[in-house]
Amino acid sequence: EILSKLMRVVNREQCIGCYSCMSACSRTWENALTVEKSAMRVKNYPGVEGAFSVRICYGCIEPDCAAACPSGALTPREGGGVKFEKDRCINCGACVKACVPRALQWDLEELRPIVCHHCGICAAFCPNNVLALVEVEK
Image 1: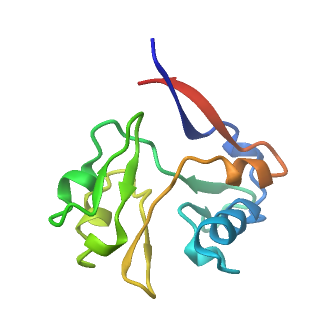
Image 2: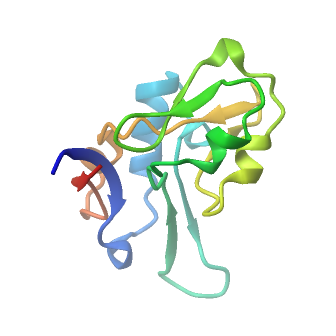
C-alpha cells in the first residue's frame, strides 16, 4: 500500500468564497497577484446564497488531459495528476476540453493549461478547512 498526497475538497459547505486559496496558488506558482492564474476555481452558484463550487484537480492516475495532449507537454505524474512541460505546449487547449470534471484551468494570457502541483498551498491559506492535502493509495 503505497501512498501519495493529493488535494481534495473536504468541506465544500464551509467555503465562504474568499478566494484565499486561489490567490495563494497564483502567487506561489505563477508569481501573479490575480486569482485568474490559479490552478483551481471557486465559483458561486447563481441564485443560491452561500453555495460555492470548488474545482480542483482530481489527481487522476490515467489523466484524460495528458492522453489528449498531442505534443506530450502533459504527462501523468507518479501518484496522480500531471506534470507540465511549458516548452512542449502547442497551446491547442485539447487538455482542457478532455478534462471530464472541468478542473484543469486555462491561462487566457499565455494560452496554456495551469496545472495543479498538489502542493497544499491552497489548503494552507483556506481559513475554513475546505481543502486538504490528503494521503491516498496509488
